[in-house]
Length: 80
Image 1 (cartoon, rainbow, N blue to C red):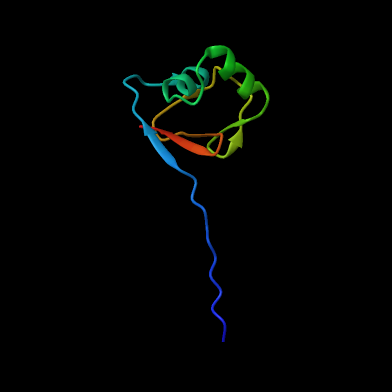
Image 2: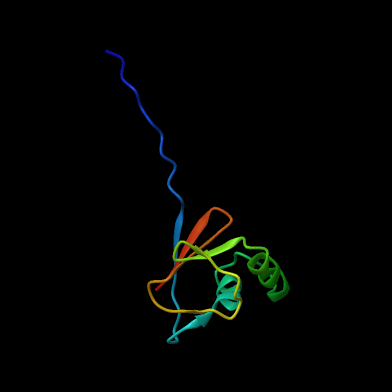
């Protein structure tokens, strides 16, 4: 009997601490270093490249709270 092995690639998870009750999505992308400018954040959000809690998000002012997970460019960022 042949052994079959599967390689499951895990998406990297980075936890980003905030000191407020919430943070807006565009500011969060800048805070975690996923983008360099607010303009770049706006572009990637409006182009549908960002998801929040596994749902595509096109709202750059979306409020993120502790426990929310943002996925962009192959990395998941968790608000803590």
